Structures are given as structure tokens and as C-alpha cells.
Amino acid sequence: MFSKEQLQGILLTIPKPEVHISKDNRLTTGYKVRLRLNIRANEEFLKGLQRTLAQYHIETTYKHSEHKSRPLPILRISGISNLIEILKLIPDELPDAKGHYESFTKIVALVSEGAHLTQEGLDDILMLKGCI
Image (spheres, rainbow, N blue to C red):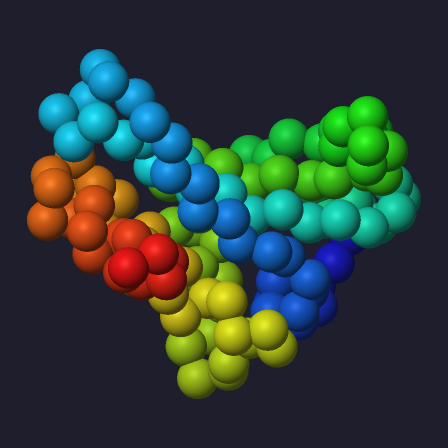
């Protein structure tokens, strides 16, 4: 198990935020937004991290192998409520090592408000992601 300070350090340095936008004709905008954090490391570390996050009521998905071409373990955090809880753990005054969280935090806020379901909100997400 990790302490809160260790967990904050891990969350600031290791995870890679992912914003995936895909075509979905069932939605009014025609696109679906999927958010998640990917953490790649060895199995023992990821299982310990998964147990620690469970103490904070954050659900994760552990896979022994990401996919056929990348047979390494991965821990995924998805779901807007889980991502909001993760972002609450990260202190605002500390910048993350890779500079990923600034735009990711704004995108999570937009999705939690339902803005991703409007064309204007989707445009904002694309701009934050760097597609426009």
C-alpha cells in the first residue's frame, strides 16, 4: 500500500492521460469522447497501486497484457467519477512532470458537465486536445 504522498507522486509522474474521440452516429454531435488514465509498470507495482486506489473508492481495470503487440501489464482508470476522484488527489500547486494534466483536467470538467454532448463543447475538447 502507498501513502497519500506517495500516491500523489505516482499520479504526477507515471500515468498517461488519454482522450479518445471516435465517430458515433447515435450521438447528436456524431462523436463519442472517452477519457482514461493508463499506467504502465510491472505487475507487483500495479496491483499495489490498484489496492491503494480501491481504498479511495476509485475503480480500476488491471490487464496482464495490454494487447498482442504490447504484452506488458497496464492499469486503466476510466469513468468520469473515478477520474474526478483521481484529480482531487493531485495537488493544484504541483505541476505534473509531463504537463498532461492541465488540459486533461479541463476536458474532464467539460465531460462531467455534459458539454461533450454539444457541438460547442466538442469543439472545446478538440481545441484542448490540440486537434484544432
